[in-house]
Length: 56
Image (cartoon, rainbow, N blue to C red; front, side, top):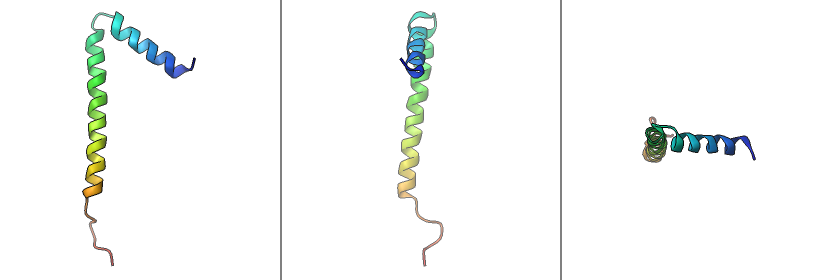
């Protein structure tokens, strides 16, 4: 198994087995959701942005 898979297994074990792990899991999920929303908003802003200077 590759290292990334083992990292995910360790993270899941931490979230499920450690007291307070649910708080950690919720924090990580919220962070990921926020990053996805920021990327989506940036992409939409880029599509609708007008150029600063008119092309000649």
